[in-house]
Length: 418
Image 1 (tube, rainbow, N blue to C red):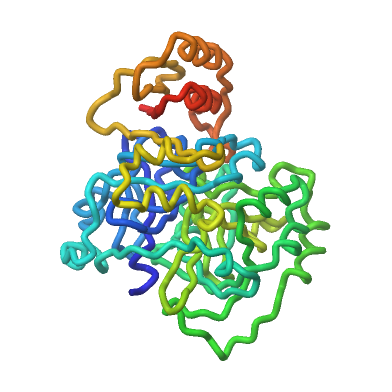
Image 2 (cartoon, rainbow, N blue to C red; image 1 turned 90 degrees about the horizontal axis):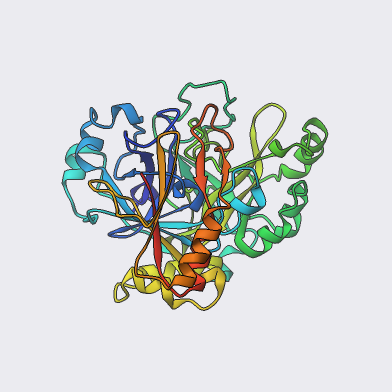
């Protein structure tokens, strides 16, 4: 199996609200129905597709023109994120914590499906998921893959599509957290790095086949870059750490001359070989940008080991995914489910309309009067905030309080944006 076989990308559907047709997020197939990605990639997307088995990037406007994407794309029908996850583009401490998600597609992947060979590049495959702390030790060799920007962050006024046409990979190496935290001080992400993240440096020694490149001598760059970064860039600015290469940011580059993540690589897998088997260790989340608008290390990936309860439960074929919503005891391990409605609109119990967009929260079962009152109370406190790096974006309406109140009342729920 080649790493590219498990690598997928997510694109919004035509009817989804968007500013450009060039934002994408990464992911990896972990089950015939399930794709691992980041929470920030899918939390405010109305409808999205998964593109698998194809080494080429196809922009949104061409999805129905390209034979592969027209015939083989999958619809996302359900999303699963940690209940405690809070998407707030203005607050990196919030959106980067627990930045992991699993999405379910409408039609399972058959890993011997020759239609992918006919229309695309190769049949897709699934990858093992790491749940062992020992496999994310500093010094562990890994690779990253993506169609995002190779090095540069896109300025907001730049509406060009900077995604690369062919899937690229880059070798990297896991970096010690104590050193990594020195680069994420303002704002301070030390606690988030300790609790949820894997940190990677620049150059590693692996080929995309998993073989070691013995001709390359690894020379750490971070100490050379640190002074330059902190002196040349205003670290007091909110932009000192650029957030989730998310769907609101259309142009991305990674893995070109310098391995790492950059815009539109968000959600992509960090892959290593465990006992000879390709295994995903984490999903791309955070990177830094210097004065020259270059994406620079260290890079942060949300660890699958640190979120193993969520992923393990959803991977258990004997468990209905809805059972996972109720099966976890700790708050951080509880799972939030959301349905993406394609052909119908739900009968929502709560709805708020703004600028021709609606957000509804549908309770999966009747709730008591007290719970209903609590939900109504929190509904009145809705906060409006625009996507962080989406110029002229339609305002996103969210209330992270509502699912928590529903959970406290002992009910499962799902929300739908349409």
